[in-house]
Length: 407
Image (cartoon, rainbow, N blue to C red; front, side):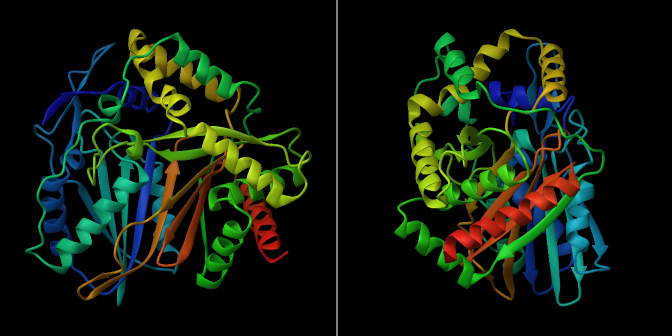
C-alpha cells in the first residue's frame, strides 16, 4: 500500500511532532494464549488491516505518503503480571512512548500474562486508528487466536476526508469552527507524569442509568457531560464548562468504511452552564439537544473539512502553532468519548470480560475520559498529566451521576 496522507492524517502527523497523539485499547480476557499464537494472529491482522504496518515515507513540508513497504509486523512485548493493575501501568507507560513514524509500524501490542487470564494492550498512533476501529482489531485478533482458520480477508477503506459528502472547504468552514470554539478554554494545568485510572459501572448501575436517561428523554453522553460540568463547577471552575464530545463520522460518509482500521472520528465542543440550570436532568436535556444540533452535517463536516485549508501551511508551521496553542490555553475542560463495543464476548475457549480505551493527546492536564459500553456494563478510564485534580474531578462526577440516577 502507498497513498498520500489525507488532510486530517497530515494534521495528526504535525500534532505528533509537538504533542503525544497515541490512543490505546485493552481487552481483558479469561483464558490462555501463547506469544506464538498471538504473533501469528498479528501477522494475519496485518493482512486484514494494512494500516497496522505502515510508516510515513518521503516526508516534505507540504506532503508525505503512507506506505507498507519495508515495515515489519507490529511489535509484541510479553510480560508477566505482577499486580492486578499491571496492565493499566503498562498502558500508562506505552501511551508515553512515541512511534518512529519514518520506520513504522504505527501500532504495537503488549501481552500481559496472568495465569488463567491475560490482558492484550494495543497502542496506536491516532492518525491510523480511532477507538472503534481499534476495537475491531482486538476482536479480529481474538477470533484468529481461537480459530486459526478464521476469515481475515482484507478490509481497507479510503480516509474519512475522501468520503465526506461534500469535500470542498472554504472560509465558511473556518467561521463555523471559530464560532464553535469562541469563549472556550482556560489556562493549562500542566503536570509532568501521566496518570491512567480506570473504573466501571456494573450491570445494575448501567441498567439504572440507561433507564433514567430514557425516562428523562436524554442520552448517556449528555448525562455524563452534565456530571462532569457539575463537578467542575463544584471544584471552582468559573462560567460554563467546555466538554469535547467524540463523534463517530461513519454515519455521514458517502461510503461506509465498515470495519476498516482508520481515523473516522472527530470531536465537537459543547458548553454546559450548571449554574443556569441547577436541575441535572434539565441540564442533561439541554446538553443532549445541543449535541444533536452539532451532529447535523452542516455543523459537523466543517470540523473535518477545515483540515483541507491547512494544506497551505508547511507541516513545521502547523506543529509550531499547535505547540504554542497548547501552552497558552486549553480548548475544553474535559474530553469525553462514549462508545459501545460491537464485539462478541466469546471466542472459543476465550472470553472477553472487559474493554478499556485510553488516549494521550494533550500535555495541558485536560482530563481525557473514555467510556466503553460492553456486555451490559460501562468501562471507564481517564488519562491526564494533572493527576490529583483529575482524580477528584472524576470521583465528584461519578457521585453527581449516581445521585442524579437515584434522585
